[in-house]
Image: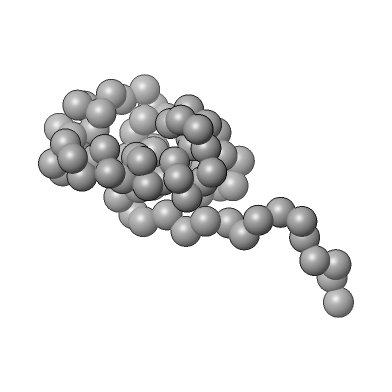
Length: 73
């Protein structure tokens, strides 16, 4: 039986959260993400905030970094 890991479980991101993070990782601004995804501005902001919270990051850069390290995006 493997030893329990001290790492927290990998968070589950919604498809919208993943897409917004992917686009942000490519350098897209929130306004550009709105245009590219055809989502409302508030929905993009909510997805980014939710992903940041789920990943335990302080900001979007930290969220992108953690998502990449966890192979979520």
